[in-house]
Length: 359
Image 1 (cartoon, rainbow, N blue to C red):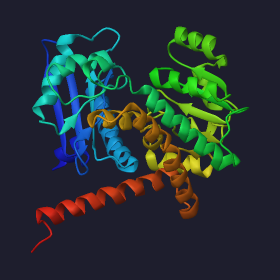
Image 2 (image 1 turned 90 degrees about the vertical axis):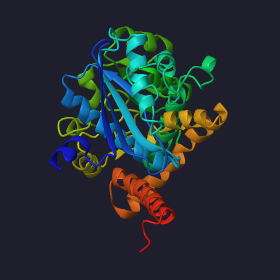
Image 3 (image 1 turned 60 degrees about the vertical axis):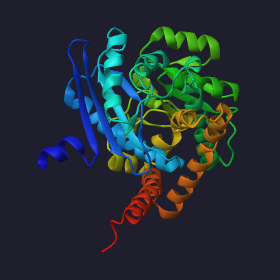
Image 4 (image 1 turned 60 degrees about the horizontal axis):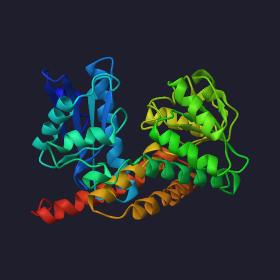
């Protein structure tokens, strides 16, 4: 039992995928299928070791369960990580091998793009399995989900501004974005169009300069990000960046960004932000636009529906902040509660209809 607990942390299934001939070393984690098949992206990242990759995929898949539950989608939570460098290790053979592992799960897990993978990578996976979404429009998919994700984050930022200032206008407001990938770029575009002043940082200096040229604003060093005196800090890179070292340096009244698992420790660091009076928008709530987009793709809904649902993230964030204030709990605790209510209800109904509750 100790081995199960160490490797799964309450997950339904954890699959280790290995194909030395093509360089595939991956982990698929299925946290819950209570509400539907587990859907979550495939992340490709040069983890330092397998333990780090396992920790990441377990946290990410749990977050997907809660994300789908709060967003009102009939999906479970899953995630996959490929231990490799996306800048040099990608190949058709690698992604097709991964696709065969996804196919072997028979639809319990549906994959999609994530950090380090792109729409064209999904096309290779699609050669081996139908359980993949986020495909190009040429293959009948909805294309890049990042604009929808970014719209949801933008809408969540509006809800946070309204909670703090009594209005959601971004004119004259300043936002610092950490991470300028597809989501960070599109968020910068939305914010610029709304009249916000931008600060940004990324590990790719050329990308920083290109976005500065397009949207104006100011490039800052990574170590300057947390101490910026701005209205909103928006982490859009990797997780674990809100912790006991960085939280004391934050001067912004709002943290609202697209990165997954921003809190290194969900309870301790969520409470630390709350005690400092910093409003934190739970990451799995505010970044649900991408999941909404691929859910719409699965059910063949039009793109306009996905964009409409992404804008409604504002209402979800507002509700969570209201519960947080009324119950005097952190926003993370309030959103977890909403998710768990729906998950428990689904589990109860499943037991009822399968006869598990009958004596």
